[in-house]
Length: 410
View 1 (cartoon, rainbow, N blue to C red):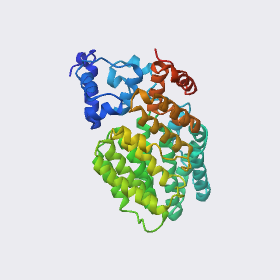
View 2: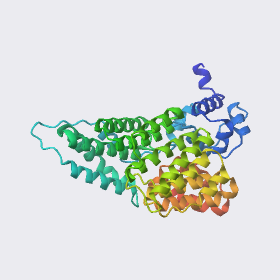
View 3: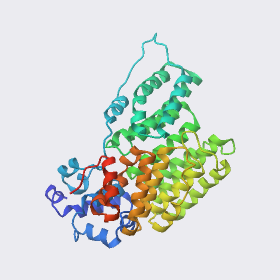
View 4: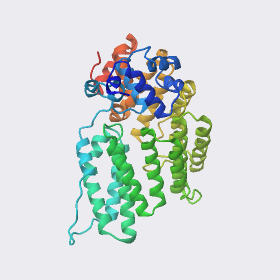
């Protein structure tokens, strides 16, 4: 395709088609995910319909895994003026921490690994707590990363392996901070470094967690679902689910990763087969169990059924799944995320459910403001309902838009 064709007004449909095929989605699947028909997607791709308004354009980009709107529109000015992925004020500091290398003097006392492990546990507690979790955890990460890197160089044997496992966990926190931020290269960097640290630690538990977080990266990047499932199942082979909760929770989590990967590409049978394994693990762990930082347990397994049904474009099933009680999940960020996914489920049912969408997004914002503020679906939905919603919900949507610091869309 020539540059002149690429930059032509009619190239938008061609870009959408290319992005859809790269994401492995059918027209029917994509249409269902953005609340439109298969014929609507076809009309967009064949240029019978023009570029949609910004809120729907944002949702389309989100479902296609497109980070930069210019990749769809060809208009750099539009990409610069929009907010597909908002940048947290501490993003530069976290990126700098990932690319800063400190070398210890030979006489420098290495940090105590036990103390570093405690700091990592505290950072996870901060991440899952009420309030602005990104803002609260950001000041902790740079020094913690630096001290853990120093510890992995200074210690040997068992202490070094413990430091490496803790470092992998710290990279997972950095990845979570960077998610929904305009820095995909930094997200990939954290995933790769975490897996490297886990492998160097020769720790099956750390490797399993690294595989879970790499699955999220690969799904968002549109990598082949076969490769994602293979990674998860290779890590599963390192675990002994009959050994105790730590192995069993990770075993269930990795089967949940495979389920989400299959749902993302519309393979319902495989998706629910793997979800059943995760469900079995949650049942064995008991209703009251939730992993200390992974939060795997009964509530999370049930809540991810909302996401799976939505990705499989089963709107009513997703709404039915959204009736799950999220209160027992001991993480404000997780509760908020699953409330947003519940709102996404209701949005697939059409305009009649706009009140439910706004209500759920308000609840999600109350649980964890920054989870909602940086979520692509939430941003596009609130923007759209604040401008085109019915009079009944427009005022609430506009108030939520202000609280999320979103610009008004003409």
